[in-house]
Length: 251
Image (cartoon, rainbow, N blue to C red; front, side):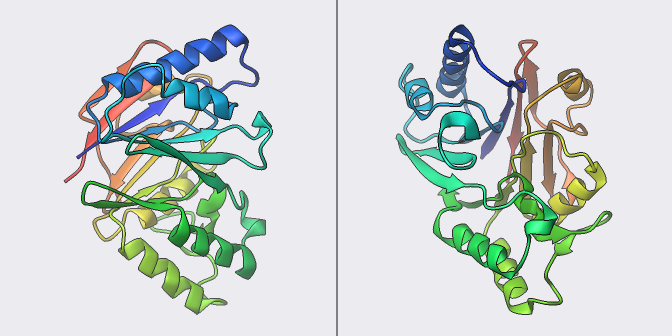
């Protein structure tokens, strides 16, 4: 199976010309990819209409699956996830929390329900799970492998979380911008990728992120890929000077 990560530059506001160009770029990427699954960086577009138009501009394989997120300022409540699968685009609702101080029994219960109802999907014979950006605060730990944040106070929720993880093959954790405390972030991805799971994360780019990713395709702050708590390398890295694309092969 081939997994492709795609990152665009971070933006605050897109002009009409920039919107049209980005829609065309998304369409072209989807039409030309050989990947089975494509994950785009967060806030890739602002309008639901733009996203629908993007996937109609060119002929796209029916068996491709792709994950998108629309920016909050699109007029919707929260940053919304969308999944393209079997030629259909469906909404996966919005991010439930973004910071550790919002993690409690109630918010975790809501997230666990989302994991079961909307955030899990299959590509070929692999089970995928989406943890949106700061929802990774369900874990804690600065080094090594993180653990369930409410492990001591909510052991039943911890058990449910572990069962959910153990029933998928791939965990996706797209984030909006590069993580400030990167060691904490890597510890969480190690947890998501333990027991021979895969974990993939991508973010919008700013500053020298693109140049650093091209210089070091395996270890950078834009695209992170892990299996069994170890970083894995892409089989392809390419860029047109603005967009970063990396392709990974998973067993």
